[in-house]
Each structure stands twice: as C-alpha cells, then as structure tokens.
Length: 173
Image (cartoon, rainbow, N blue to C red; front, side, top):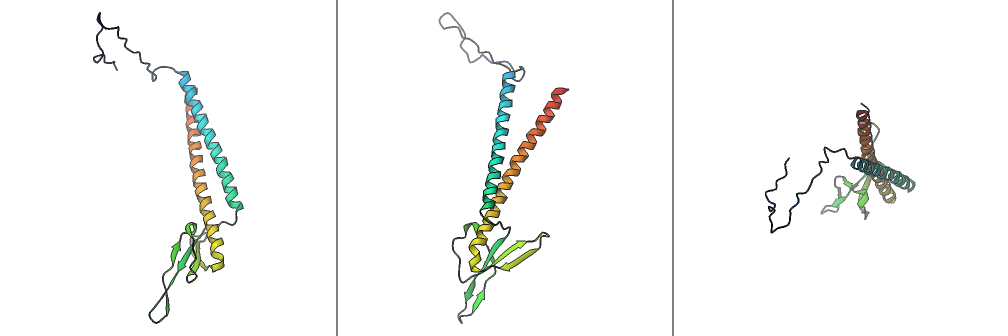
C-alpha cells in the first residue's frame, strides 16, 4: 500500500527538508525478536495458568477441610394463620443457603437433593441442623465454582498445547 504524501509540505528553499518516514512491513519481515517475544508472552501466560491451578487446588483442599460438603438445597415452609387461628401451610420455597441470615422458628424446613439417578429426595431438616446444613451447601457451591474455573483454565492449556503441537508439526515440514 503506497504512503500518501499529499498532506506533507513540499520542500523549498525557505522550509527545511521534509523526510518521509520509513515503515517496516512486519508481516513480511522475518522478525526473530518478535517471535521470541511472542513465545515469552505465551510462556508467561501458561506459567500464570499453572499458578492459578495450584491456587485453585489449595482453595479446594481448604474448603474441604472446613467441614462436610452437601450437594443439596434447603426449602422453607411457612404457616399462615386464619381468622379462626388455624395454621395453614404455604408451599415450600427454596432458600439461598449462602444468604441465610435468620431462621424462622415458625417455619418448617426440609433438605432436598437429587440421587445418582436424578430422582428427587427430601427429608425434614431440624432447626438445630439448619446452620450446619447451610454451611455444607455453601461449601459445595464453592467447590463447584472452583471446579468450573479449574476446567476453564485446563481448557485454555489444552488449547494452547494443541496449537503449539500443530505449529511445531507445520514448522517441521
């Protein structure tokens, strides 16, 4: 692509000589410094991913050491009083175990989950169990989040490895 010089002043006796800058065509030049820099950047990136995987593993061990992990959820059922004083139960609603700050002593709680076949199971959850159960559920969510990030980083590493193997095979031809 030619460089337009229309916008540059023309040299004459009264103005200094104008020099047209020389541009390198990096896409066409063999630039070993750029190649080495790109390899260093990829090495740095892979090293950061490796450190992140180590940190994720450390966090997973820490979460696991804090107590039991429960892949389930809590549901709460409240009771409404009628004009006659009779208690009518409302439908169960799912509780966010991570945000559980108060426990309603008037409510009924149940623990719910899925078995290995995907079938729903439930069991009553006593008031004395609510705190420990909600913490176990929160730990499960932490492990789930850490595992998702671990899988994402591992996917990046697999992709760069595939690309590097393909590049090396291409360069050997």
